[in-house]
Amino acid sequence: MFKSARSLITEYTTSISKGGCRLQSKQALPVGTRFVFEMYATNAEAPVEVEGEVIWCGPSSESGLHELGIRYLPSEEKRAALEKLLEEIFAEHRYEKARLHPRIPVNLVARDALSPEQRYLIRDLSRGGMGLRVPAETSLPADLQPQALASLAVHFAGEPPLEVGGEVVWIAYGRKGFTHTAIGVAFVGIGLQHQQAIDGLIQLRRPVDLTIIFGPRR
Image (cartoon, rainbow, N blue to C red; front, side, top):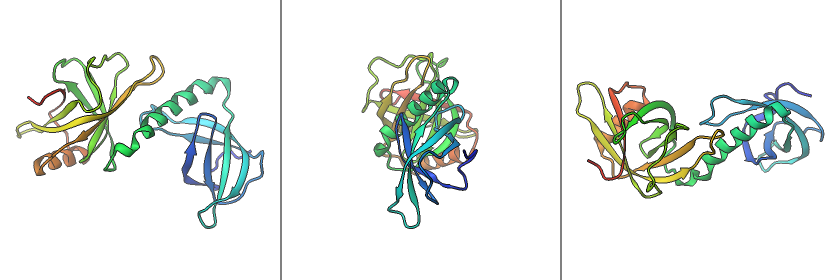
């Protein structure tokens, strides 16, 4: 058993499922080989350490590499954590085609325009849109659905607030006590000032206030 696959496996996965995954490897491994690796998801709180077993191995279309079929072998204590992580990964990639711009991971808290006590976590951001993570105790508006209007109001010190308009492109509803609800928003028709505001957030410029507005812009 290998404690780490770092010297064997490249840094990307070609496919993933609830039972296992397919990895690119620098060398062929015998069926039955076991090793421990870590799995990550953007919305997950922490990586999950998983034991895997090689169930097949064959040549890859990438020159000099091999493909490995890996079966997860989680212990009972880690099974729930693995399932939760996989749900997060599936939620992220289910709607990946809706993204036209690569998004940068961020951790920005924004309040709801209609219910200021309600908060959202902006987990990724680009000039093309943003990904929101909704606290478990938060109830979304009953009429919120894809194509609904959504805006991000950005307020930097010494500058007037600026609203970046967009629309909801997907909603991945979480499972109570298991995963968080996530929302994907695509920005629409943004100008130079909007781009500069988004770039400022990505470059860690600290805002005075961030507000999420669902529905028509004010």
